[in-house]
Image (cartoon, rainbow, N blue to C red; front, side, top):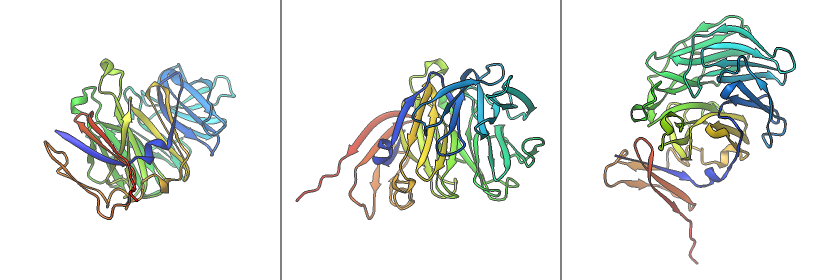
Length: 341
């Protein structure tokens, strides 16, 4: 069975790639210039120049792999590890790590889940349907759980009411992996029926505004040295209810993504991958009229033949990817714009 996507070729060219020495699970920026990333062995790296270079600043806890970091400011971060432990990380203080509590929202390698803050509300997501919120800077937590059959890898609280969660499975068997999303528009009191849209786990999500966002995922290369390892980028223009594949050309799992501002976004992943995008989102092919409404692919999935309809097509370079589940690239065809005079 094949599975097809069409993308604006400008998307891939707009991401610059650098590498660190460890696999990365999360990324957190406190402003346009200063950010933090890390994961493997508790290692934490810092940039002060918008991601042009990164420096090691220390390790969290007992050097255990961690899932998430959120820095309140340059000097204080909150870390959520694989086992559900939430702790403070203050690199200028010795010891730099201190325990707060266990969220019970444990995760599995490669260390996903979420810990973040929106409008002074901290939130944590992980495990089977576990979603927690704190209104007092992490001292106490309340549960607003979603579907207990969905293994949560990441969440984005866009504002106090609108929350998007992405996840998949806790299995290491790629043949039965999938990626799903669920949305709440009332602060987590109720959740939409999970939408299964990807043939592998979806492990990171972030938004430019309340409608347009990204998610990332894939299959990692670590389990059994998986030859089908892939990293993928997806986009939504309806607040996380539906997603369209934008790029699946990366060679290993992408674990997290953060939108810093309208013209700056980062994604991180296995093998120390850091992707940086400094292009304004309006020019990345994320507009609904560019993808969602303008491209019709049927049947999808397909067996032998398929049809791609692009009404009101504006001349541009595009790329067509044909994949075999679970994500084995069968054909990549780039169509170059040629103007005849």
